[in-house]
Length: 189
Ligand SMILES: Cc1cc2nc3c(=O)[nH]c(=O)nc-3n(C[C@H](O)[C@H](O)[C@H](O)COP(=O)(O)O)c2cc1C
Image (cartoon, rainbow, N blue to C red; front, side):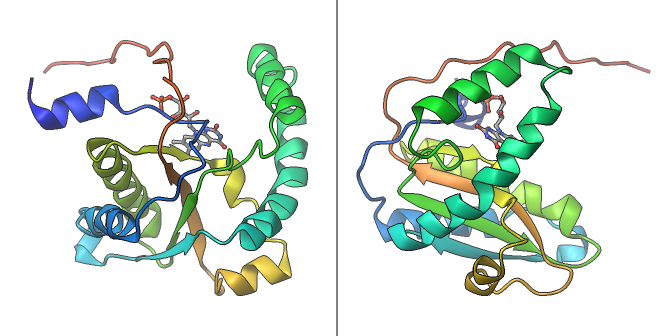
């Protein structure tokens, strides 16, 4: 099997991590893979904030969790099954947003090209991490920290900045199941 196709097919969102730090050399390799992503006009409209400090993680969780809970209530009627599984995580996990990952990477973009380009950097990072034996998860709930002044300061958030990811990084604990995926909808002309 082609190594890239294999990584694309086998990458999973990882929601449980070993309590083992990721060497900075590997974190840098993952970030460099993100930085190699295509970007509109080669603008590379991103910067990266790497969080390893438990006290900062605590602040992030305190800022994100109430927002995540609010949003979760909105899916109650739309997707009751997902609602129940998220509620279970809130009840069972000490950190149901960042899943106690050793490393959290915020990809922060600004400008007209950020929305198209930054997710490509995130996917590059997730595939590169997988190829290095690391697990990742894009946690949209983890981006809901922007109303907290002290977190804004820590992330150096400026007017117009948007968070992509953040992308969790760590050694996976156990196996993650491939969720069902729809067949691609394709029209050939
Ligand atoms: C924009 C975006 C936001 C996501 N936010 C979350 C999140 O907040 N929490 C979470 O556990 N997973 C999150 N995910 C992961 C998805 O749930 C996951 O990609 C999807 O279920 C498919 O599983 P797979 O990544 O293993 O193929 C997010 C993924 C994307 C692309």
